[in-house]
Length: 77
Image 1 (cartoon, one colour):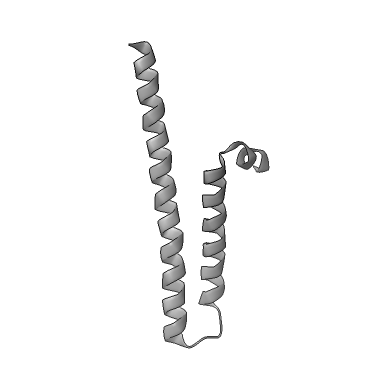
Image 2 (cartoon, helix red, strand yellow):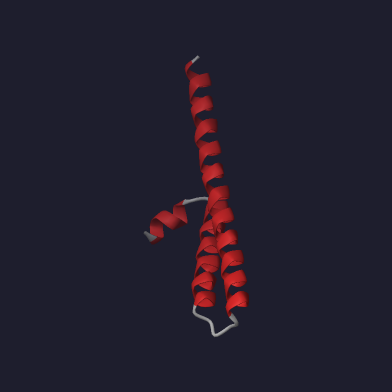
């Protein structure tokens, strides 16, 4: 699995790292001894960051796939 992560481009590695960091912080904040409203707001914010990076990653992957398919079709034509 480490070799697969080394083969992907730098943007993808940064996105994976951010998802891991924000996800971990989300879990830590969920069990932190904070006031309930602060804890809920913190977890929601961190989860929002995690989900945002994930959606951004999906859009990037889809855009790359479309670009590759378009380039492949132009070569065949």
